[in-house]
Amino acid sequence: MKKILSLLVIISVLNVANAQDKQIISLGASPHLLLNGAYDYDDTPVLHISFRWLTSFESGNEIGTKASFANLQPYQYFDYGFLYNRNIKIFKNEKFETLAGADMGLIVRTYPGYDTQKVYFDYGINAQIRFWISDKFGVYITGDIGPRNDLDYYGDHQAIHYNTEVGAQFSF
Image 1 (tube, rainbow, N blue to C red):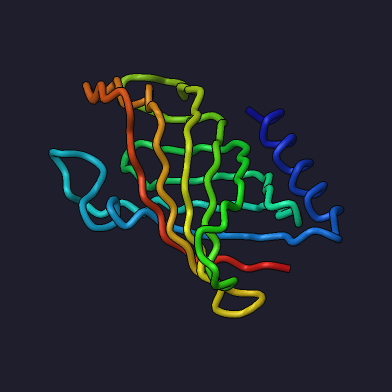
Image 2: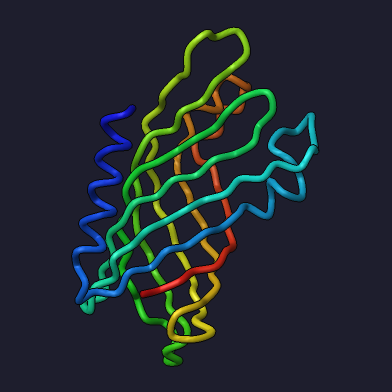
């Protein structure tokens, strides 16, 4: 796991080295988990925060790193990985951006009864709408769809899991 985290740091540093391209840092949260909790049997609010660091190229392509954490008590949830987005320009207004992409990485969880963490491969597709309030600051909403094998522990055998995230973004 330390090797993967080191690789994420290196890619983030390389993103900064690409000074001619726009850098985007975003911080978001899942409104569903905040309002409804994580489980059918427990509606305790869960803060699931996500961080992304992207390089946006003039061609409309984006590459970057992602990480998220959820305060599932007494368990832990952490995921990290890489993502690719493509600006598909649905809106004529330049303050709006629409993107579609894919991501992959790892989910790290702890469960009751296990002394060690369990690691799962994670992948999915996503769509995002961004609204830039100024040249440097904006807001977004993202929808992610993908399989979640880590939920099998709870008997949640859904083949596909959907998540929504809203947040703020900064460019430089």
